[in-house]
Amino acid sequence: MTAPFHPASAPDYVPAPHLRDLQLRKLQEVVNRAWNRVQLFRQRMDERGLTPGNIQTLADITTLPFTVKTDLRDTYPFGLFASPMQEVVRLHASSGTTGKPIVVAYTQQDLEVWTSVMVRSFAACGVNHGDVVQNAYGYGLFTGGLGAHYGAEEMGATVIPISGGNSDRQIMVMRDFGVTVICSTPSYFLHLIERAAQLDVDIRELPLRVGLFGAEPWTQSMRQRIEKLTAIQAFDLYGLSEIIGPGVAIECPEKDGLHIFEDHFYPEIIDPETGQPLPDGQEGELVLTTLSKMAMPMIRYRTRDITSLIPGQCACGRTIRRMSRIGRRSDDMLIIRGVNVFPSQVEAALLEAEGTLPHYQIILTRMHGLDQMEVQVEVTPQVFSDKIGALEELNEKLNDALERVLGIRVRVTLVEPHTIQRSEGKAKRVIDRRSQ
Ligand code: DLL
Image 1 (cartoon, protein in one colour):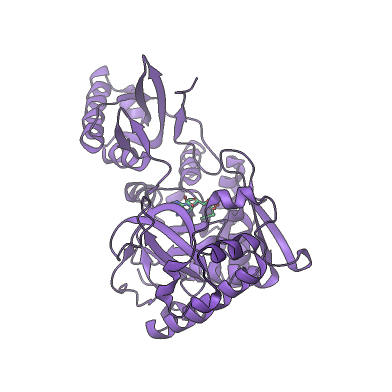
Image 2 (tube, protein in one colour):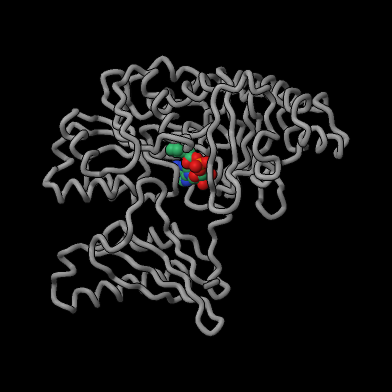
């Protein structure tokens, strides 16, 4: 599939030497801004004996201090702002799982940049004016809703700001309003697919053709399931509140990695243990520096997301670099009886098998001091209504598949469709009852 060229995508094709020049100039500016205006950054530069003048080449970025999530919490709510409140026109916040939320700020110019990267994201997926976009990302403090909204609107598409939830209404709107593009978390879209079937709506017969899915990890197998069930093109959209929200990186029709909007976000990959930079192609933690942010510049922000920068140029012709899809975070690793387990490995193993539904949950408990891991997975009604042998056979198959992937034996429980709680936003894959 190739998408017609959209003029907003022009910066995606800037020759690399020009892009590097632009990045260096913008890096120098943003470091200057943060140094002059953000006390924590100034202090960390002082400790290293650095001033903005030390940034002479792009490679010098590695001398700069990292910023981490706790820096945002420790300076809650406004401690990292580089603009006075009079210039801040929007605040968003992300709750996270523990403690205080983190607060992020935007000037008018920051919002314009955000909108422009979302326009480029939609364009890369072949969306254009004339499309009808159902935006099922949550509106509110979460960046997903408004981020996608302004991008789609700026592009001239018709936006339906439906937000997450109320699935029956989502299906009605999708069918009656001629929706061609859906934006949501992949897990919520799976729920919509399922609900549509219950309501006798066949998504394959609707004009829906493209989905921009993100805000949570999802696997290639999950994409295949979605595309098979709905006959749409499913694209991976990446972003995080600290950097801007959705629109940091997007897949193109090649679906061979996500293009990072490098003219605004400078990527590095580091070894999460040592903090040392890693070469292209090697997997590590993604570190991002905002090159354009005014209200809240982030210098070398450690995302905790694990990926690699893909060497070479994409067949689509874009010059901006790509990263591989984010399957996991360095902090979602579970250690089960000494073995490292990632939920994405579980997802991939489960979805390989016929008869499973893409709804699963991992439940951790502790018995006699030993960690136990149970994987609950829904199976199709057919498997459930078949004779008992079919269930046992599938159970055995999944057990073996998981053992092969994880290296340990875990308990698989097959459950009926709709047993696992659905989420309207990010899915909760792991329930940890070990401390209860
Ligand atoms: O989730 C922004 C967003 C909204 C992205 C809508 C895409 C679409 P936060 O709530 O701050 O922001 O969460 C950011 O979510 O560090 C990743 O761990 C994860 N994440 C986001 N997109 C993806 C993706 C939004 N495409 C955190 N694949 C990030 C995997 C993702 N993980």
